Image (tube, rainbow, N blue to C red; front, side, top):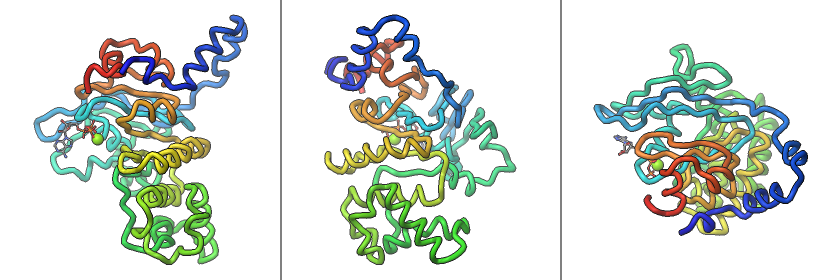
Length: 286
Ligand SMILES: Nc1ncnc2c1ncn2[C@@H]1O[C@H](COP(=O)(O)OP(=O)(O)OP(=O)(O)O)[C@@H](O)[C@H]1O
Ligand SMILES: [Mg+2]
């Protein structure tokens, strides 16, 4: 694989466009608004027992952006993702050091309820995991627990809009009472995304959400991720550099537990600053 193979077509177009425009236009093309930081990690170290899995990770995650976490297997992507909604708390022997903020508030603060945090920072897993319940009840589960609907009509509305946002409503609207587990893999993953959306999170974490899906279902979920960006902040772990290039505005490259480099996706794939990033995106390891 060469650098060019992994270059997203949109990035290539963007680079050409910049090269062909006058300097003042290039300046005008710079983002006028500053990125609004939704989550910030500083000095994050994670240990599983005596083994350290992450070293001094620091990153800013901006509102309404998709951030991809990439890197070879075992480099700590999932570990870091789980830090962002304290899912590591549920792993015996796992210890997290450093600070992670959500809207400036430390999510590891004792006063913060992890259950409420996970409603604000939702998660979609690699393998679609619908509850053994109806399609309707899969979506309604979170809103019921968190008391988000005052009655049946409101709950119906939440279920409907969540399915709509997840691009699934048309396919399932006539069988909401049937089991979620009866859907295809791609539909199940969109159901899980609808379930995550239903509690109106601010951030959605996705750990390789397409790795169990075929190319068509993958394309649908990728399209969906791009739409969801309007309303949510998204952090996605992916093994596919093409996917990172297609869906994300920012990319972070991890290697051996360290965040080696983070920046605009276009820059990471066309002009990486670190040799390790270069080696990874050109297929030299991983
Ligand atoms: N529950 C756990 N207990 C002990 N060690 C763990 C646990 N989970 C992860 N690790 C270790 O932490 C390191 C980082 O693992 P992690 O799962 O975060 O990597 P990853 O980048 O997500 O890899 P992959 O791409 O294979 O999913 C690895 O060395 C792994 O063995
Ligand atoms: Mg992982």
